[in-house]
Length: 528
Image (cartoon, rainbow, N blue to C red; front, side, top):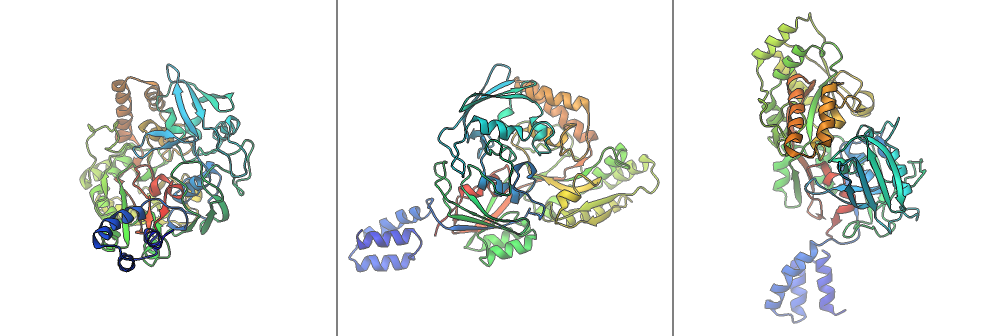
């Protein structure tokens, strides 16, 4: 290697400043014209993916109750850990469309009730075992039957999974589902070896292996082999520090303690953008905060109480105050405006204290107890949103008491257990999937206890319908039912907001979830 080549390599790797490179190259006799043409090319090379380095993430959405068992995942830290260790059969691509992962292709038989998945050859688990159909079948069955997996509701339509050969499986459904491949993109649906049970010592096909796991505190990974995905798996290691406080996360990034953070406080975006050393990653998507009521619990079983509470929240104030305008208004159903099946014909529910007061009086209840449980474990600002709701409702003579719940263990001890709670959803790539996981009668995460046979029938019809016009009509009708009678207050759809140091490359926007839909570990690289 010549001395000039060595200088070029050092500059491209960030070990020499532009000034030092130009000065030392000139001392070697390189002319000004050649230097000028050389520097832009080298700058481009500096932005290309490169191997090496340990990425330090500061992330909200972690708890001491976290597990590495994919069936339990419900928050950002668990998602990022899962995609560091494991892979799904199908990936949710940048445009929210299924792309190959451990399944290299798939096809449906007429009627979309039988699907054939061809698995990728040559992939091994971290213990050296080859990935085969037996592993896929075992992994998928973890989410079937009596499983408590967050994906079990979506897998209830599966009646059989059988092996066609070592690299091909057939999945049979109770009825046709044109969106079925989306289910295999779900962050619970990771592949593990046949018979595997010890998730304290995870074995996966992911880019990394586990070094240490201190749930709710710190998780460390290392790369021990070449990753099977071309153009991914650049890092030598990954360290995730759980920082649930949004101000502390941002301070850790600004001070250089971490290289990237999720859940950037929208109010801090202006501060981040002023820095030449920091960058914001923004992605409009299906993420939404939700104030959920148990529809089968008093006083929320009364439709007028639900209507009063809907009109008692100032959604525009939530968007402006909580999210600095980074998002769009919600209308109490989970399908965002960017989704092709969004129903635009529903009247926008707006803050109206007079209507709220009317419905509350109409309910005819004597001093009902309305206790709203809130925690910033759900999202930064959840408690503030609850307090804002309390103030808005007071103008309609509705008394809401707010209980600030501990962040640690919120999703284990409060969510799905208390009848009036603030939480959030990350959205799903397809409308039918989102409706299934949150509002189907038997969905494990049906946080409003919404149980309507006519809704379930519409959902089943929508999944099996291949005619787009009919399919849209079914999905629009379900949105109207939730809008008119449901027990979920969905005030806004928020943009995903991450931030990172300028030395980080590869962190791209994704509408599915924060940190590049959880794929941060395998997609990011360090520029220097």
